[in-house]
Amino acid sequence: MSTPPNIHALPIVDAHCHVWDLTLGKHPWLAPSALHPHRYGDYSAAKANFLPTDYRAAAAPWVITAAVHMEAEWTPDDPLGEARWISELSKHTGFPAAMTAQVWFEKADSADLIAQQAAFPLVRSVRQKPKAFAKASDWAPDHRLDGSMNSPNFRNGYAALAEYGLHFELQTPFWHLPDAAALAKDFPNTLIVINHAGVPGGFDRATLDAWRVALAQAAAEPNVCIKVGGLGMHGGALPRDARREIVLTCIELFGAERAMFASNMPIDGLFFNFPDLIAEAFETTAQLPEQARRSFFAGTAAKVYGLDLP
Image 1 (cartoon, helix red, strand yellow):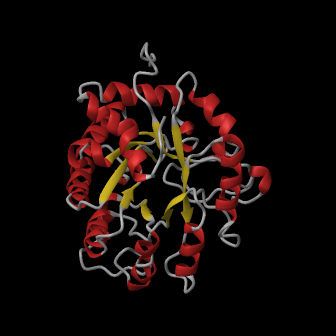
Image 2 (cartoon, helix red, strand yellow):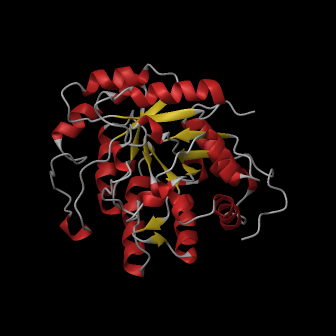
């Protein structure tokens, strides 16, 4: 895909990326011999250092105005270590501009951990991947799967977020998005940020139709927004037509004021060239009004993550 002639036409905030230094030994899933279950399948090619210089080089010739680091499953026996490391990294490199920290709502000390994470100036949100059913047919509206968004132990920990003004970053299969809608309704003072476009995970017509219905339920709640990226499935990228439909559906349902561009680099670098990924997003949104594109590529993320853009 060719890059548009004016790569500075719009500012870009990357609402979802990762950086890591594997020499620290703090990411068990990225250890040389590890191969944990992953929605993309074999992620071995991502087992390499990815630091701010690597990110910027991968994006070139595009210039990313600001980026948000998503917690990268730092070893849980050092729950504050990632926030400390990212804070130092940002101090020395100016990258990232904000971050999401990790938390485990079911733990008895989760409120204390939330308070400690919130004390880091870069931390704007936390992520825990709720327990989920393996397939859509197992889900039911009244389920109480332990560790899911419907379970009391999850919700008890989640309740502390509002006190510290932190958002919740949600990665879950699309069939659990009605759970997210209920969570948003029950905790109206906490913003939910859906990751990876609600994880459609497939591209057949039945899957995309079901994904849209579930996503619309979440979009109906005003305290839910979405990051549009991570458009892969087990074994590779979703087809181009499916990616286009997903991007435009997210913007249609949420509005550009609640939708954000997200690269998911370096994980999506398994099957996307970073400049081509950006160029594709520009091409897909080319027919939108300019203000909508400015919101999608930068404004919404700046608002959600409290960024002062030049």
